[in-house]
Image 1 (cartoon, one colour):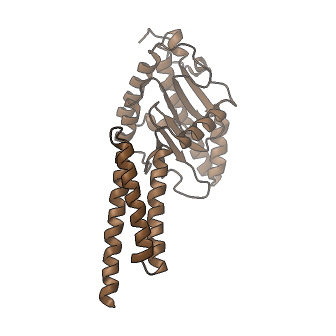
Image 2 (cartoon, rainbow, N blue to C red; image 1 turned 90 degrees about the horizontal axis):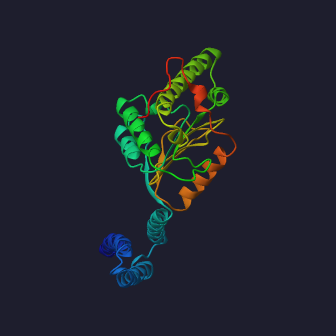
Image 3 (cartoon, rainbow, N blue to C red; image 1 turned 60 degrees about the vertical axis):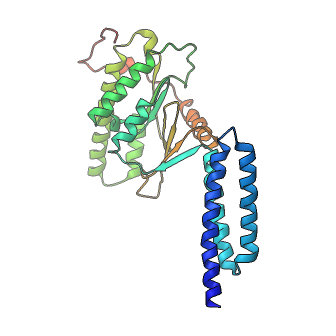
Length: 287
């Protein structure tokens, strides 16, 4: 009896491995136009037969059947997430230079980045230089019929009132609130100087291709380089609100985030960048 049970368990693992292999093959075949229809049909039939045989003849215990059903369901959900456009879920790290540099360099005709002050983009010399290069490259592209809220370069930050509200939400005593207020406003001043220094050296057409939006609140991080969309959900009752980034490449979820983000922008008007001029910066020649 013990040998039979061990034999059954061995078959469970072997069959589960076969199911995973076949599921992977199905995915590969689906993307191959030459053999997709035939191979996917055969593989799906084999997979269905294996699952039916496993559930009826091999697995005798309900717990074993539930385990396999759960594994199959996870595989199905993984495949569904791919079809919905989710291509990666990663940990958000402020020092992840390579990730963000690659994101910037992948931008071709559009770039949208958002954040409380966007200061993280200029606290690294490499990111600062790359962002400037990408902005200038994009605004120099000839673009006709630029629509409001869909400018080639969109930078989204908190308004001054939004920063104050964020500090109140974060909480703390008056001393810590005053410190945060100074820090956040100083960060915002740095990004204002950085953006103005780029914008002021562009010609009039190029200037119209950059839009800065100052929003009262951001319910999530949103960045889009025209190829990939990155969303970072914020949690109100968790300390690790910056801990997750979801990377999309098209699909249902990206559309939901993009349409919602556009709804946030449509409630306000773009900032007049001429009013951001520091006293020490004057209009320069075209780049």
